[in-house]
Image 1 (cartoon, one colour):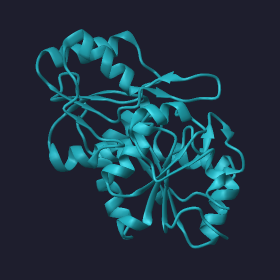
Image 2 (cartoon, helix red, strand yellow):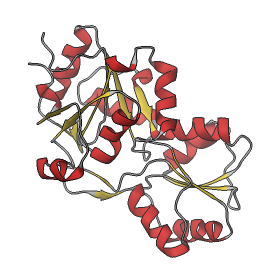
Image 3 (cartoon, one colour):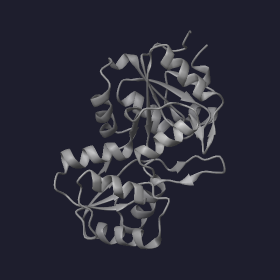
Image 4 (tube, helix red, strand yellow):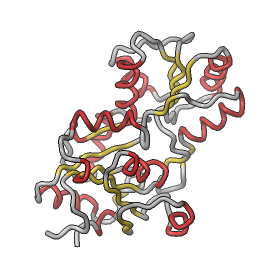
Length: 257
């Protein structure tokens, strides 16, 4: 097997890279299997904080890839590590799905209405009351942390407004932007990888469809990067962005020659 890039560890985004909604992008599972058979380490890095780790394991397995829980790294995990190490003992008001809130509680982080921190996640169960309560806390000067900056989440039926869109809403309503963002392209996500991967940085490659998260994450952390044009980014967007990935491919399936 011949690869188009020299790497031992492959960090794959999910939405827009491996699948769109419930549809695989080409034979992405076959590509993942071949990488594993060649001795490459495969991890999945997702900024999507609407699901917990077990849901990703179930989804990826249902799509045909025998994923192990330790291969999944999420912005929720990065946020939990940041909060427990940098803000120990602080309470949060989470704007997130029930699965997200459950994961936060299970990590021992106190969840309160009148919390120290507003923690904004990708909330597909969002309602007006949550946004209103978050806005009140932010107006009181409570810290503002977000799980990730993605503006939309791609799907097979149309883009979903994501955390970046909600950040813009709250910035408009209360004049506050997050002081910390934990997911790609920021350092808290890299800290999670450092606990799992011992390979030298030049042997690690980030593969994703989004310039301002996936590719910048690779660049910011001195990894190689592969931009795939199967999700958000088009060739025209790449040209005008000024961001330079190591390699550009139509899909993940062209990684193997």
